[in-house]
Image (tube, rainbow, N blue to C red; front, side):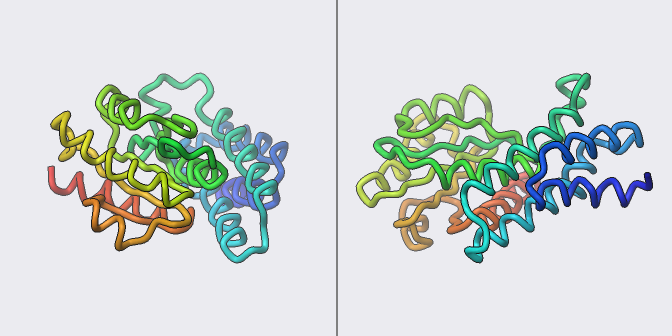
Length: 220
């Protein structure tokens, strides 16, 4: 099968919510010697982009997002199978995803996590209701490029500010970009607490994250 047809099949497997087709297409990509990063960015990510747009437009819902994520992750597992850790590193950067301390809502975080992975980021998912100190410690330990945190309640928004303060206290704020979101979070709030980025949907989160990583690397 031609390269373009395989990439289109990978994209379609995600947008059509078909994990079995995703695995089949991933095996075909390996047989055709398509590099994992190419298969992800030119195939799977395009399918996830369609899913994200439909979700943002209210034409697709959380259960479908989760199936699309399963298709994506199943294909990636095949694409990087038997590769060394270095070869499997097809990402743009390393990102922490979590729901902030005191907040147990994680649907939005999970969607954003999936979109990050679909666009080549290595994601460390710390879960929900994560203590600020744990976020800071992981950022330092793993030398991440970006910390993201979602707050779904106004009462938990201050944890986003506390993360920035924690990174500053550890002396690593200059090395870590911070971007935040969530229903009550706004660009004004993010600017006020000194964060680097804001997104109110999964597609924007990916766009902002890419811009932040590229900007940081151009400065170094």
